[in-house]
Amino acid sequence: MKFDELDSKMRVYETAHDRNVLPGMYMVARIDGRGFTKLTKEVHPFEAPFDPVFRDYMIETVKHLMNSGFNVVYGYTESDEISLLFHLEENAFARKHRKYTSILAGEASAKFSLQLGSLAAFDCRICELPNKQLVVDYFRWRNEDAHRNSLNAHCYWQLRKDNHTRLTATQKIEKMSTADKNELLFSYNINFNELPSWQKRGIGFYWAEMDKTGFNPKTAEPVVVKRRQLFVNDELPMKDEYNKFVLQLIEQSEL
Image (cartoon, rainbow, N blue to C red; front, side):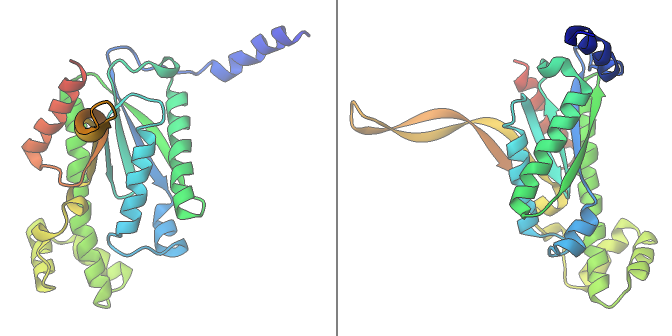
């Protein structure tokens, strides 16, 4: 059998289940750390509940993904997860799921591993959303999840430091309301509202026109020019203001 015939015969098995995102659908990639609880608590113990070094690793990983050849409008990270919103007209690899999931998981794993100096792995899935409002809802969902997880994590680790076991700390938190959790932190002299925003709301990434000082060799004078740069926002707005913020990014990208 000639190679061309063999190639055609076998290629069918590789591509038979290809799935493409339809035109006009918004794509959001969700990239999650695989086995990161063990990785960050046992293999490479980071400070709990939040470690600035781990945060910086995630920031650099998102920045890498947003410069990896795809047209990404907005990136967001909280804990060990990353969400990327692609431009509505992004058409790389004919919008094949397997290409996006494999490339993004691989790029994220490689970048984070290089920073950590050890093996780390991410998985990836693609969420298809038919309209802007659902895109806004998606990011509001992850933002609210960050807030909930942050409150629980601060409570859990305060209890662990106060000699509670994993089980008793978890059971105590499960029975508490949001108000009760805030009161618990107050009892340890912690005001949840005053904690760093990145711990409670996550971190956003988007492209923005920013002033950059250059030098004009002809006039020998400094000049200020506009450059498209990736902006990292660790003071994201909350609730309805966050909705407006995400919607504005989407609409600006479609002008």
